[in-house]
Length: 460
Length: 94
Image (cartoon, rainbow over all chains, first blue to last red; front, side, top):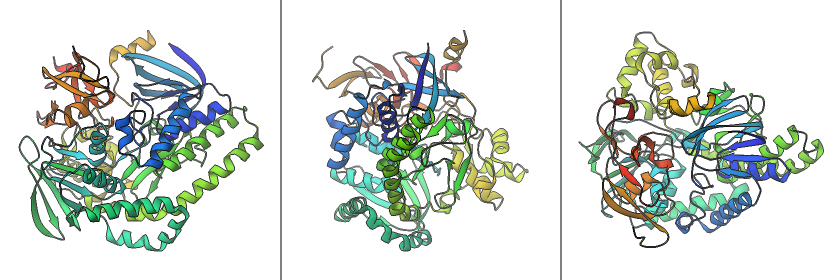
């Protein structure tokens, strides 16, 4: 079935929902496609159930519920459990209820959000090792990390989600055996001069302070300057080995949760060859877009953390700005009216960005986290090691796409989502270059796996 | 099939009944409620693997759901009577 509308929004996180609401308010015919079963994205996951609300603080809960309710009442058509795998111009291909479908729209807003920066280390494929965000999703699904509540849980890495997760774990009575900090102290000191701007956003700063206080009260053993993390075990995680300021240490662990910050999800826009920029502090690519989400691809807009990771409340603003911009672009909203509606949103967004700029440095990924030993599986799907990658570089392949062709790193079912950033870092380090100078993986459509049957149905 | 409460769903994981909250994903049920350890064996190196990201990115949560293989179980909500199995081979090798 081919559907026709003014706007299709991809993703139902804060940005996608708020974009859909804003565009609907201007009278546009809007569809929102979402790979999840209910609106909310990651931040407001399962927000319409008591379980999903339980771990959110009251202000966030109220904001999330209001947003989802506004969306439900907006008149936008919602397509849950819909996996988008193609976008040609503004025609979108997806799989829904096992069948392929297309949506034709005048404009598309891409809002898939962010993802945790995947950082490989030896043993990271062992059951028991997870990303911090994944662990939080388990908690928010009413689950626990292990059958035994007293089983030791080790947190490792550097990033905002690690604080939130630690608070959630402590509140659930979980024993955190250690917190292995991999942060980059020189970068953290650079955050100092930027910190006073935080007063522009006091609720946010106070929330951070509150989380830190809770963690201090929980007496979580902190280990600083951690390098060379290794997960050990035969069929599942048993121990974590690491160097603390150069001294080898080992801990028993049933669960190891790693987090190294959040980066934008760029696969959809990359497959359209949209222009991207490199953030040298956060070491990630982000789409080159205006405040209103206009990308270098005609008719395609980006909103939320997939534009740049500023967090949920900024995503609400970015989504609304993109919705208004699309209405203006389609001539539904007069130029002056669009400017009038956008102005306060832009100014709030600017304030948030200034207030939070110091976090870019506080949570800057330490470049040494990618200096993994040769036996590390970098590509989990195709089982390609760091050694395989370095060997390819030594043979003269200097671009990530060349290394991909020679090693198969990035050719598995996740399509380079889990290995792409590390591949670039390792290829660059092997040539003493910066990661932005070794290319970025060419993303092909379909950018999500689709069965041949479903694919052929579309063209039958 | 009986429900323990309206907000609970009974699925069958490896033949065993498992009551979990409605609305959660199959991966979250198997990992966070059944504590299954691994959910598949990897097609390339046969190593045990388990869901890593739980949000649709990593493809480590592939399981067999109601007879269909290679399903990203973190994106599928649990449903009453659902039959879930660990996956030991990808679909195309059979």
